[in-house]
Structures are given as C-alpha cells and as structure tokens.
Image (cartoon, rainbow, N blue to C red):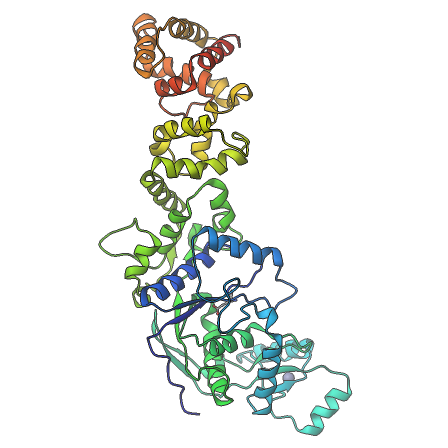
Length: 499
Ligand code: GLU
Ligand code: ZN
C-alpha cells in the first residue's frame, strides 16, 4: 500500500478528545491548552470531542465536570458539544452506528478479521511466548482461519472480537515534537478494534473520528506513543476503504509531566486534580499560565503571559520532548503574580464567590459590603498567593458577631501576658477623637511602644489577633480603621477578658 500523504501544515485542525472518567486533571488541561494554542496561532480549528464509548468507565457527571472545567479555564472550541459543527455529533457514544459500519467495511476489505480466542487462551499463549523468550503479543492465531474453522468456532458458541491485521513492516514517522520515530513490526502485533460483545474500542474510534473529522495534527501525551504505529496502519486502511480525509495526520507527543520524586504525575496525586486548584483559589489564568510552561517556553525568559499571548507565538515544533517537572510552588508563585496584576475591582469580584462559599458573605452582597471589600482588597493583594488566603485574611471585616479567633493563634498570642497590652490598646483607642489609620497608629505606638516599652511585634501581634482573629492579616492600622471603632473596641474588650 502506498504511504498516505501527510496532512499539510495548513489549515490546521486539532482536537482535544478526553474520556469522561474521573475528575479533570492538569495533564488533560495541558493537552487541551497546547492544542487550543496551536489552533489559535495558525488560525485553524479546535475540535472538542468526547471519547465516551466505554460505558463501564465513563460518566455523565465527569462529562459535565469537563465542560465546566474548560469553561472555567476560558477555552472556546470551534466544533464540539454545545457548539455543534459539520461533523456532529461530537460525543462518541452518539456515533456508534458509524463505528459499526466502518468495522464491517474493514472486515470486508480484509484489513480486520474475526478473532475467536478467549482471554484465557490468549493469556496461556502469551505465557508460553514469554517462557520461550519471544515477544508476547498476539500470535496471529485467527488471522488466516478458513470459513469452516470460523463456522466451527461460532458453533461452539464463541463470540468473536474484530482484530486489525498489522501489515508486518516497521513504522517510521516524523513526530512533530520528537523528530523521527521508529517502531519495529514485531512490537506492534494485531490488535482488537471491537470487543466480542460488540463494543468498539479507543483503538478504532479515535483514529476513525480523526479521519472523519479531518484532523491534521494529533497532539497528545507521550503515554499514547505506543498506539501511534497502530493508528498509522489504521489510517492507511481507512483511506483505502474511502473513510475520512485520506490524509495521515501529523503526530506530536507532548512530554510527560513528572511529580514528586521524579515519577510521573498521576491522576491520583492531589496536585493533579483541577478541583484542588479551583477550591483553593487559583485563578484560571494563573493555572493555564503555569501549565503552558510544562514542555514549552515563551522565550525571552518570559514566564508571565496570558493564553492569548501564548497563542500568538505558540509553535508545536518548539515543544521540548524532555519530561517536564511539575512544581507546585512555582505554580503558586505564578498564580500570585496573576493576583497582583488584577485590578482591585476584578480581584474583589473573584473573591466574592469564595467569601460566599465560606459563609462569610451571603448570596446577596450589599453595596456597603461591596464598598468595604473594594477598600480592603489593596491591603491584601500583595499578601496572598491564592484567593482562599485572601478570604482568611478578610473575613474579620464581614462576619460581625460571628467573629471567631483562630484557636492556635489565640492560644499562642492571647496569653495572660497580653492582658495589659490589650487593656492599654483598648483605652488608647477608645480615647481617640477621630478614627483613621494615622491616628490609630499614633495612639497605639505611643501607648504600647513608648508607654509599655514593648517591641512592636509583640505589641501589635496581640492587637492583631484580638481584632482580626489571626496572626496573618492585612496591615493592622488600616484593618482597625476599616473594621470601625465599635467593632474594634468590642473585640479588644472580649480578648482582654479571656483570662
Ligand atoms: N480519549 C483519549 C484519552 O483521553 C484520547 C487520546 C488521544 O488524544 O488520542 O486518553
Ligand atoms: Zn484469535
């Protein structure tokens, strides 16, 4: 069979095609990001396809989470669920008839054959091959069965799987990320396309849809490298039977992401879960920015950029094939950078849902609370790396009588020794004629530092914990001003009565 022409570099059609199993994870997002950026950079098409043919593992809940995750991260897609497109439907579970038809054609044209082997028989023969020191792949047992043998197996009540017959030559392709790659024929045995129960597998449906949807570039994780020679063989066969665009997609395999201890970041690692990032208050922009650095770099030492800025310069050929190290601290630092770059209004808006989910703010935010938040945000903007830290620092302003002290901080700071400090602070503030940062600071310095001869840290930490509930808070004098005279005095009073 003549080699299939490789899809031209333009127009680009790429796809992100996750299976909806479990929770969305960062590896997925990285793949999505690189595909999206390549499509946007080239003015091509970004296809979002759902690979949900495995009824036992896929779930509707996971599908919903995927859509929500992509929306949260600000991805748009040109074809796919909810937006439709010329190759709809984009959920593979709705394309079963297509796969059944293609499977039948592949069999009819002799590219695939019925395999009657039971799992036990296969395992037995694999074991034997291993023992004999041979490569333990499928041994071609059913490849050349005659009609009579097939009929006999069927008469025994055996259900047949559909197996693809590999052409028996080595496979070489020019990987967009890794350069020339070669797989030897003996390492790529015939493989199953359709299970004996009629269920089509990833091995069939993924390349079939890539062909039908005119995908020009398959950009995906390195873990799928071993499926590529099979898929190349299948694309050749599909072109032969007239299914799809008749072109060989370009393949590009994105590097592994390594976690702690230099092992592959696993879906089960906590820092893998997209939920963790949303729950702790990473910005979608910050997370996407960091994930872009896993295998790619902007150049010019630039590490702070938006998805759009990335897309403007992204070339998949510049992806680094070496494993990328996932560094949560770095990710957090990039996020902190993003937080610092937001306007106060924007940061306030982003904090609100977190303040609400902590029960600090109610569903309806009053204009007064809004105004207070806007004043408070600049005080903490430089002090937080993730939004939940902002929530922890700002809650004291909004909880009123529901105010509580952080138990550890209170135990460490609001000791019997702090009583005189709190009493003096209370009285000095009570005597103030006007309630503003400057006067508050002057009064506290005079009474605690000059008067009691305390070190500022000791003096102010007691006041800080009494009033904000925590040792980590916005700047103290501003905090007192924003909290207001009555509430500040009441909290100092409560704290000095603790012992
Ligand atoms: N559904 C496959 C996965 O999530 C897609 C792999 C591919 O991009 O070919 O692993
Ligand atoms: Zn067989």
